[in-house]
Length: 488
Ligand code: NAD
Image (cartoon, rainbow, N blue to C red; front, side):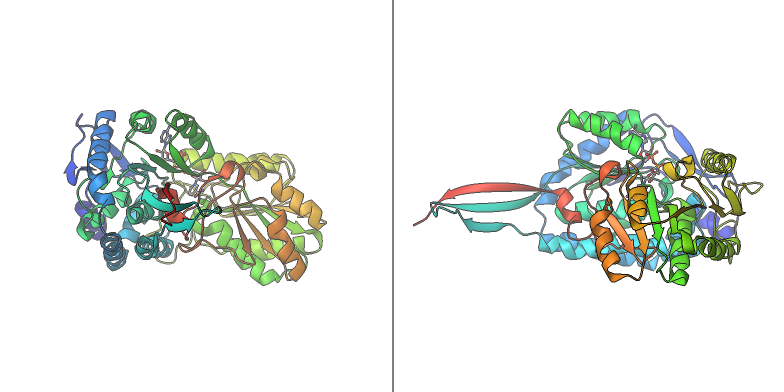
């Protein structure tokens, strides 16, 4: 292995973080973390058991009262320090993410900046949590309204953005005064472990932030969700797992935030600036190798420009360089594992069998590693599986439409509603679309809109709750109303 990669791996903690201590799993078990670009194991990490998870919740519950009483400014300063430490170690975080997740280094650096920014944003929000004092309408009483930390949280994160998905939950929880147990994805625990180490360095007290990587997510988190000391579950991942977790959370009427799957439509109207639309399409489709919940999943292009849009998009897609993300000049890394690569190829094969045309790409790249050619498909039937399921890969299916009504109907014809994209230069249309499209977010003449200062989240089966923005901290606060008789 490259010496720089080896020395980074040697420096990353690989234990469980419980009560401020790095520990082995109580069973002594460990599991392997692989590089998806080579299929080789990078290292192993401690494999938390249900008993370890319970020890982490014990630590979080024990730390809660004192942490909630900490001055908001102190919590804010810890987050600000963490932002600075991560920024100073951006190269380490980026390389580690590329090694365990696959995205190309420039994109990994982008995620470090994005992920760290949640900490800066919430460092500023920590001191702005306010309640109110109000006269009742009849003047006979007063209302005192408090905003209090909700309590110990379980934060479950996915593998596709290993840093940012952790910081946007943990940053808000810390700002609000909540303690937490983080369960990172089995495929990418290393970035979260390095993040946890930095949080300790930034001054997070023992027990406030605990991390439990595990190879058996359900059996490890189940007992925590059933424990009445847990007050909040925040999950980012697939809708399928989200539904299971919501059912478990219902037992104790747990507060939940759910950032689930997407199936983003990307609408290009004939009046669009086509160059901008093609660039936006590239960003919305190929960012993170297509493995983003915000990835454009279905391109609906108005008939007069469909041919031209496909041609221009395919030309740029074909120029993308596929390879291990650590190498210079690489745009597209590998998919996360063999199963994901095979799933992407099955969706392409199905679309082609139904009459779609491969404009560029169309197949896996021979190994090692789980690479897939960036692909553009045209003449895709609207009901092809590639358009109805989340692809999670670098494949752009293009479907033609005639009218705005038809485009809106197609865009909304999904149980998901995370994000949509639309390109148009017609002002009235641009103002109409946000009112007609069923999604939590809309990129208007823009292919990437995620921003820590904006509320991220979905409607329908894409979830509930918002992360980032002014809204992000609300997810970790409970409102208390105190009724007081009028002093007059
Ligand atoms: P996943 O649902 O398989 O796993 C997500 C996390 O849940 C992982 O940590 C996993 O170990 C854990 N998990 C799995 N089964 C569990 C169970 N029974 N109990 C408790 N935890 C369990 O999703 P993934 O493959 O890691 O991520 C991809 C999915 O995440 C996609 O659907 C994508 O759209 C979605 N995603 C959504 C957002 C968003 O903000 N809406 C952001 C990123 C990813």
